[in-house]
Image (cartoon, one colour):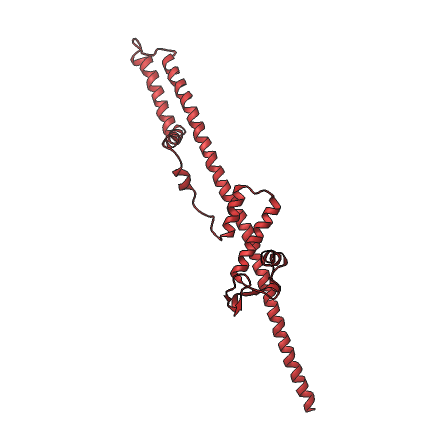
Length: 231
Protein backbone atom coordinates (compact mmCIF):
# COMPACT_ATOMS: atom_id res chain seq x y z
CA UNK A 1 0.00 0.00 0.00
CA UNK A 2 1.34 3.41 -1.01
CA UNK A 3 0.34 7.04 -0.44
CA UNK A 4 -0.52 9.20 -3.44
CA UNK A 5 1.61 12.33 -3.76
CA UNK A 6 -1.39 14.15 -5.27
CA UNK A 7 -4.43 13.17 -3.22
CA UNK A 8 -2.52 12.05 -0.10
CA UNK A 9 -4.74 8.96 0.04
CA UNK A 10 -3.87 5.28 0.15
CA UNK A 11 -3.19 3.61 -3.20
CA UNK A 12 -3.35 -0.19 -3.58
CA UNK A 13 -0.19 -1.76 -4.97
CA UNK A 14 -1.94 -3.06 -8.12
CA UNK A 15 -2.93 0.48 -9.23
CA UNK A 16 0.13 2.34 -7.92
CA UNK A 17 2.40 4.05 -10.46
CA UNK A 18 5.84 5.43 -9.66
CA UNK A 19 7.04 8.72 -11.08
CA UNK A 20 9.95 7.01 -12.85
CA UNK A 21 7.47 4.92 -14.88
CA UNK A 22 5.59 7.96 -16.24
CA UNK A 23 6.30 9.48 -19.65
CA UNK A 24 8.50 12.57 -19.30
CA UNK A 25 5.98 15.02 -20.77
CA UNK A 26 3.24 13.86 -18.41
CA UNK A 27 5.73 13.75 -15.52
CA UNK A 28 6.60 17.41 -16.18
CA UNK A 29 2.91 18.31 -16.31
CA UNK A 30 2.33 16.74 -12.88
CA UNK A 31 5.47 18.30 -11.44
CA UNK A 32 4.35 21.71 -12.67
CA UNK A 33 1.26 21.41 -10.48
CA UNK A 34 2.95 19.49 -7.64
CA UNK A 35 6.60 20.64 -7.31
CA UNK A 36 7.41 17.94 -4.73
CA UNK A 37 6.56 15.18 -7.18
CA UNK A 38 9.65 13.12 -8.11
CA UNK A 39 10.61 9.77 -9.60
CA UNK A 40 10.02 7.97 -6.29
CA UNK A 41 6.59 9.53 -5.78
CA UNK A 42 3.47 7.43 -6.26
CA UNK A 43 0.11 8.22 -7.83
CA UNK A 44 -2.89 6.06 -8.60
CA UNK A 45 -3.68 4.82 -12.11
CA UNK A 46 -6.88 6.90 -12.07
CA UNK A 47 -4.91 10.06 -11.32
CA UNK A 48 -2.39 9.19 -14.02
CA UNK A 49 -5.21 8.74 -16.57
CA UNK A 50 -6.53 12.17 -15.66
CA UNK A 51 -3.16 13.77 -16.38
CA UNK A 52 -2.87 11.75 -19.58
CA UNK A 53 -6.16 13.24 -20.77
CA UNK A 54 -5.00 16.67 -19.62
CA UNK A 55 -1.77 16.21 -21.59
CA UNK A 56 -3.77 15.35 -24.72
CA UNK A 57 -5.77 18.55 -24.38
CA UNK A 58 -2.57 20.60 -24.12
CA UNK A 59 -1.25 18.92 -27.26
CA UNK A 60 -4.40 19.87 -29.17
CA UNK A 61 -4.22 23.44 -27.87
CA UNK A 62 -0.58 23.74 -28.94
CA UNK A 63 -1.33 22.30 -32.38
CA UNK A 64 -4.41 24.38 -33.16
CA UNK A 65 -3.72 27.51 -31.15
CA UNK A 66 -7.01 29.18 -30.36
CA UNK A 67 -9.65 26.48 -29.98
CA UNK A 68 -13.05 26.62 -31.61
CA UNK A 69 -16.13 25.75 -29.55
CA UNK A 70 -16.38 22.36 -31.24
CA UNK A 71 -12.80 21.48 -30.21
CA UNK A 72 -13.45 22.77 -26.70
CA UNK A 73 -16.47 20.45 -26.39
CA UNK A 74 -14.32 17.47 -27.35
CA UNK A 75 -11.58 18.38 -24.86
CA UNK A 76 -14.14 18.77 -22.09
CA UNK A 77 -15.55 15.34 -22.94
CA UNK A 78 -12.04 13.85 -22.70
CA UNK A 79 -11.33 15.58 -19.39
CA UNK A 80 -14.63 14.38 -17.92
CA UNK A 81 -14.30 10.97 -19.61
CA UNK A 82 -17.83 11.37 -21.02
CA UNK A 83 -19.44 9.98 -24.19
CA UNK A 84 -20.15 12.12 -27.23
CA UNK A 85 -21.98 9.53 -29.34
CA UNK A 86 -25.70 10.16 -29.21
CA UNK A 87 -28.75 10.38 -31.45
CA UNK A 88 -29.04 14.08 -32.29
CA UNK A 89 -32.09 13.76 -34.57
CA UNK A 90 -34.66 14.23 -31.75
CA UNK A 91 -32.85 17.39 -30.59
CA UNK A 92 -32.84 18.83 -34.10
CA UNK A 93 -36.54 18.08 -34.61
CA UNK A 94 -37.45 19.49 -31.19
CA UNK A 95 -35.96 22.88 -32.12
CA UNK A 96 -38.18 23.30 -35.19
CA UNK A 97 -41.13 25.68 -34.95
CA UNK A 98 -44.60 24.89 -36.28
CA UNK A 99 -44.03 27.03 -39.39
CA UNK A 100 -40.74 25.25 -40.10
CA UNK A 101 -42.36 21.83 -39.79
CA UNK A 102 -45.19 23.00 -42.07
CA UNK A 103 -42.67 24.26 -44.65
CA UNK A 104 -40.87 20.91 -44.58
CA UNK A 105 -44.12 19.01 -45.12
CA UNK A 106 -45.12 21.29 -48.03
CA UNK A 107 -41.68 20.92 -49.61
CA UNK A 108 -41.81 17.14 -49.18
CA UNK A 109 -45.27 16.95 -50.71
CA UNK A 110 -44.29 19.33 -53.54
CA UNK A 111 -41.46 17.01 -54.55
CA UNK A 112 -43.51 13.80 -54.50
CA UNK A 113 -45.21 11.80 -57.26
CA UNK A 114 -48.50 12.32 -55.44
CA UNK A 115 -48.27 16.08 -56.04
CA UNK A 116 -47.10 15.68 -59.65
CA UNK A 117 -49.88 13.24 -60.62
CA UNK A 118 -52.54 15.19 -58.71
CA UNK A 119 -51.52 18.48 -60.32
CA UNK A 120 -51.32 16.85 -63.75
CA UNK A 121 -54.84 15.51 -63.28
CA UNK A 122 -56.06 18.95 -62.23
CA UNK A 123 -54.53 20.54 -65.36
CA UNK A 124 -56.12 17.95 -67.64
CA UNK A 125 -59.48 18.44 -65.91
CA UNK A 126 -59.19 22.26 -66.16
CA UNK A 127 -58.27 22.19 -69.85
CA UNK A 128 -60.94 19.55 -70.63
CA UNK A 129 -63.69 21.55 -68.97
CA UNK A 130 -62.79 24.76 -70.79
CA UNK A 131 -62.14 23.20 -74.21
CA UNK A 132 -64.84 20.50 -74.50
CA UNK A 133 -67.39 20.42 -71.67
CA UNK A 134 -67.87 24.18 -71.32
CA UNK A 135 -66.73 25.15 -74.80
CA UNK A 136 -69.48 27.78 -75.26
CA UNK A 137 -69.41 29.11 -71.67
CA UNK A 138 -65.81 28.46 -70.63
CA UNK A 139 -64.79 30.26 -67.42
CA UNK A 140 -61.14 30.26 -68.62
CA UNK A 141 -61.03 29.97 -72.42
CA UNK A 142 -57.86 29.32 -74.42
CA UNK A 143 -55.04 30.44 -73.84
CA UNK A 144 -56.06 29.79 -70.19
CA UNK A 145 -55.00 33.12 -68.69
CA UNK A 146 -56.54 32.31 -65.30
CA UNK A 147 -54.72 28.95 -65.19
CA UNK A 148 -51.42 30.65 -66.03
CA UNK A 149 -52.03 33.15 -63.23
CA UNK A 150 -52.74 30.36 -60.74
CA UNK A 151 -49.64 28.42 -61.84
CA UNK A 152 -47.48 31.52 -61.51
CA UNK A 153 -48.81 32.17 -57.97
CA UNK A 154 -48.19 28.55 -56.94
CA UNK A 155 -44.63 28.66 -58.33
CA UNK A 156 -43.95 31.99 -56.61
CA UNK A 157 -45.11 30.60 -53.25
CA UNK A 158 -43.64 27.12 -53.61
CA UNK A 159 -40.09 28.22 -54.54
CA UNK A 160 -39.37 30.15 -51.27
CA UNK A 161 -40.88 27.32 -49.21
CA UNK A 162 -38.63 24.77 -50.90
CA UNK A 163 -35.62 27.06 -50.37
CA UNK A 164 -36.50 27.37 -46.67
CA UNK A 165 -36.65 23.59 -46.38
CA UNK A 166 -33.36 23.16 -48.24
CA UNK A 167 -31.65 25.68 -45.94
CA UNK A 168 -32.90 23.70 -42.97
CA UNK A 169 -31.56 20.47 -44.50
CA UNK A 170 -28.16 22.16 -44.87
CA UNK A 171 -28.29 23.22 -41.21
CA UNK A 172 -29.08 19.64 -40.18
CA UNK A 173 -26.20 18.33 -42.32
CA UNK A 174 -23.84 20.88 -40.76
CA UNK A 175 -24.88 19.83 -37.25
CA UNK A 176 -24.39 16.16 -38.16
CA UNK A 177 -20.98 16.94 -39.68
CA UNK A 178 -19.88 18.81 -36.54
CA UNK A 179 -21.09 15.92 -34.39
CA UNK A 180 -19.17 13.41 -36.53
CA UNK A 181 -16.07 15.62 -36.30
CA UNK A 182 -16.33 15.65 -32.50
CA UNK A 183 -16.61 11.87 -32.36
CA UNK A 184 -13.70 11.35 -34.78
CA UNK A 185 -11.46 13.82 -32.91
CA UNK A 186 -12.27 12.25 -29.56
CA UNK A 187 -11.64 8.77 -30.99
CA UNK A 188 -8.24 9.89 -32.30
CA UNK A 189 -7.25 11.36 -28.95
CA UNK A 190 -8.53 8.31 -27.06
CA UNK A 191 -6.43 6.07 -29.34
CA UNK A 192 -3.37 8.15 -28.44
CA UNK A 193 -4.29 7.75 -24.78
CA UNK A 194 -4.68 4.00 -25.26
CA UNK A 195 -1.24 3.82 -26.89
CA UNK A 196 0.18 5.67 -23.90
CA UNK A 197 -1.43 3.15 -21.54
CA UNK A 198 -0.13 0.20 -23.58
CA UNK A 199 3.39 1.67 -23.62
CA UNK A 200 3.23 2.09 -19.86
CA UNK A 201 2.00 -1.49 -19.43
CA UNK A 202 4.76 -2.89 -21.64
CA UNK A 203 7.45 -0.93 -19.79
CA UNK A 204 6.03 -2.06 -16.45
CA UNK A 205 5.93 -5.70 -17.57
CA UNK A 206 9.48 -5.52 -18.93
CA UNK A 207 10.68 -4.21 -15.59
CA UNK A 208 8.94 -7.09 -13.82
CA UNK A 209 10.47 -9.59 -16.25
CA UNK A 210 13.92 -8.11 -15.64
CA UNK A 211 13.42 -8.44 -11.89
CA UNK A 212 12.37 -12.07 -12.32
CA UNK A 213 15.40 -12.75 -14.51
CA UNK A 214 17.70 -11.14 -11.95
CA UNK A 215 16.24 -13.35 -9.22
CA UNK A 216 16.69 -16.41 -11.45
CA UNK A 217 20.30 -15.42 -12.11
CA UNK A 218 20.86 -15.11 -8.35
CA UNK A 219 19.44 -18.63 -7.92
CA UNK A 220 21.74 -19.95 -10.64
CA UNK A 221 24.77 -18.27 -9.08
CA UNK A 222 23.90 -19.82 -5.69
CA UNK A 223 23.57 -23.24 -7.32
CA UNK A 224 26.90 -22.82 -9.11
CA UNK A 225 28.56 -21.86 -5.82
CA UNK A 226 27.16 -24.95 -4.11
CA UNK A 227 28.31 -27.16 -6.99
CA UNK A 228 31.83 -25.70 -6.79
CA UNK A 229 31.89 -26.13 -3.00
CA UNK A 230 31.02 -29.83 -3.34
CA UNK A 231 33.85 -30.30 -5.80
